[in-house]
Length: 205
Ligand SMILES: Cc1cc2nc3c(=O)[nH]c(=O)nc-3n(C[C@H](O)[C@H](O)[C@H](O)COP(=O)(O)O)c2cc1C
Image (cartoon, rainbow, N blue to C red; front, side):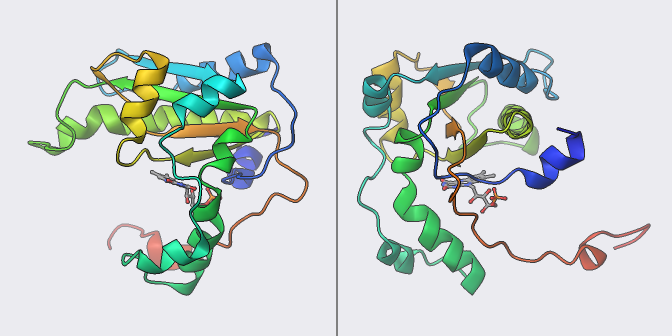
């Protein structure tokens, strides 16, 4: 798939078929992550690929299983009806979009700075770089015909996954990624229209 086609068709996929992903393809997708720009040149990232259902279950044990559309009502940061509709579709799928994926990819970044209490913007560079890697992986997966989703671990979700997978303390899990073949009826959430003429500026704001 051509690059712009992969970028333009990449979506969050939360519904998958049962198809597994060949190891060679998975390696290619993961290698794309390591082509991302990195703030300190180290590309000190690890990825754990979990496709064994029992191990998946243990790793995501902390992710809520019974969220419903109603839980979205308490999310006070939601300010737009399209945004709300997206959350109403996505929130109830948080567990299943990971468990029903062919694999869960767990990116890991070394905690070199206190990103929750940054002293300057550059303290967040390692986190920013990790997300560049995640996006590379996501676009590469799309170009291979697979789909991905991401979940940011909340509460004890990270601790649970780290314990079950033997992840050392000095690593942070920026997200869980479900990856697999999109189901034919996979739902694409509606997105807000961005008026590029208003948001892309030439020479001045
Ligand atoms: C930093 C970040 C955090 C996100 N967190 C979640 C999440 O916790 N759960 C989820 O279902 N989707 C999550 N998403 C996916 C967004 O909901 C999704 O990218 C957005 O609605 C745009 O839709 P698209 O990916 O289909 O283009 C996250 C995306 C980003 C970039």
